[in-house]
Length: 376
Image (cartoon, rainbow, N blue to C red; front, side, top):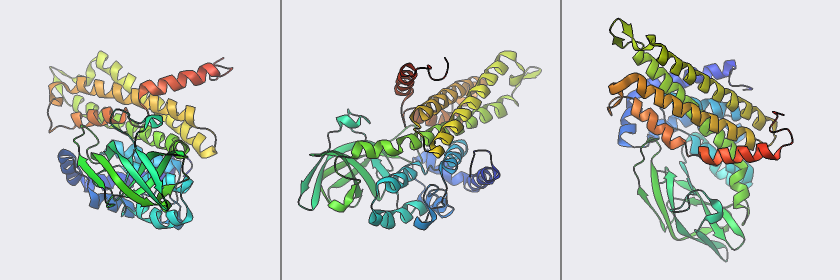
């Protein structure tokens, strides 16, 4: 697949929509309960949607950044379980894993049999990797890990996690099976993305072999950043899907809601707001596609993916605001879809870089360039 608008893309979107429609009730029930729909996740794996970036030799579908973006966008639009965390794990293994790690783990990640999580954020630290307090001490051929992680998507449901901890050599990534003695989890209750629930995860004298290191000791920051731009683009794509979902939901309702001799969408002020939403969503799609092309070319994508995520946040938040204005009091109930859309947007606003962090980075890059980011 070479773009987000190819015939392969259209077929992929159609297949995802049919899958969502077939299992709509199951997804909605799981979302209300805040439960991970494991069986449907594994079915998505069998269809190649969880292993979209993994080569066929390792059990994936052999796709690339375009497939990843389309799947993430449709996950947001259709309200189905996201393979984002698994894809992040696959990218890490492809970039940093040993031959043995790839052979052992990639097929299970790609087909959904291995549920993956990322144990990165810490209480009071967030995702500031230079401030991580979790520790890893080398004891012969074994590493002993101690620390507490929070905001771990699928922390309680996963069978494998990547843990970032500080060793003598510096920040280091470890692949830790969740059934390792000393690993405990406590489920938490997020407002959004409830199909991939969060948990706090504790590591109390967790002992793993030296083969559990991802990359080399001290390379944790490089390990994380190597795939961060691609995963940020997945977050941007999911936000675009949520913006599309909110736009469609609002227009469908407001276009049929009668007010006197008119319907809501007959009023000029509301038409202007819809125009603003449409423009913002279209701009976010363009930024996303440009960033995907940069990643596919092998160039440094950090500036492009930051613009894409920032634009996607703007589009989704504007659409969420307008959506509630259009549906009025109808949007104030938990049995309606509007709050779910808005809550998912609020959660994804932070994942992959908050708007504030992204704006700081974008501004610095513009000011450091001789041509003011191409505008001179």
